[in-house]
Image (cartoon, rainbow, N blue to C red; front, side, top):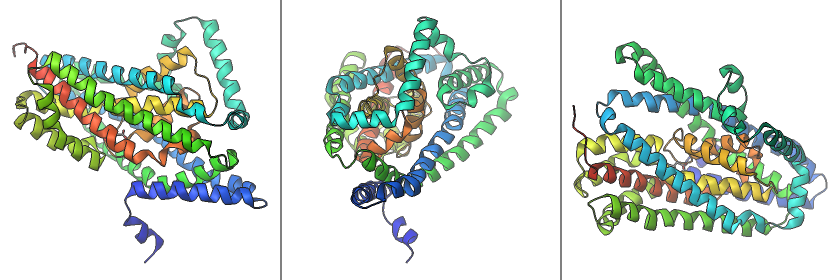
Length: 429
Ligand code: ASP
């Protein structure tokens, strides 16, 4: 049996965990032997960088294509004009709440600050250029005035915007604009474009699949590099444990407090009934780590157990799977703050605003598959000037968090579905 065949029998998340452990061991060994650090730097770290570059490479096409596909997909649904606006509005509101919760928790707990001060100074030195560039950019923004952030979102040249991973908001702006214009035109005129984006979306998702398959190797290489950068310091593991705990607590706040409150105030369903009905769906999402794969179960449950009309669920839930990722958005915010804290990067208020805006918009482009948010995370990190290599810190322990945030994602979709169903429906005319 070849190594590849042996590995293919192990679930990917286990492979990533094994990759992380292997990377740590290699890094620790490298610190002990002469020339070990140089070996890691020259022969291993490049593989990690290739992994990160692949994630960054696919980010713009993924977000661009899936955003347009998501928006134009709404065209087929006649109900869009009646409940579409309300559905999307509520989805965006719940996502913003999830992000603000993540922001509050990340800033309150500050898990990344648990890393040894000396290490942070060392890493700061290592990422010196990035820190300097950021400082410069912050100064420029200050000089340009408070609305510079808005001006920056509107591209003056789409090709130029697409050539810079840091300009993702401009790409999102163009995609939304394009999607709106497509929706406004008669279906027969835009049908070929919709079909094209549909098929492009399939291809891009396949590419994401391939990149994620490379994750165990990428994580091993990045982790070995980080361990040598950290010079074997283990305070990072305490920080990592607190980070994971912060994510878990925040996700439970959404599950056990936020959604029940929404259900209580905005639906005819009792929160207890909702929680009970959702339990099997959450379990399914938890085990598969894919909100897209859970969709049939979510649909059946909200219709059969919560009595939601098929007319509403068949529109609200598929849209939710595409654009609404509360758990993912909350986790991403904490992850970004954590990585910035570990690398000793202080985020300015305007950068925090960019993080919120990008996370809201890019959650629309996050595929509902295991690890679907890695690409988006790499992209948001790049956009605010945090080295995407920091991803290696969190990917190794990501699977359990992915399982939990997927459970939150599907619960959020169902909660909004119940809200739409309970709201007075405008007439079909
Ligand atoms: N696994 C998540 C989902 O399917 C996406 C992610 O956060 O990676 O909803």
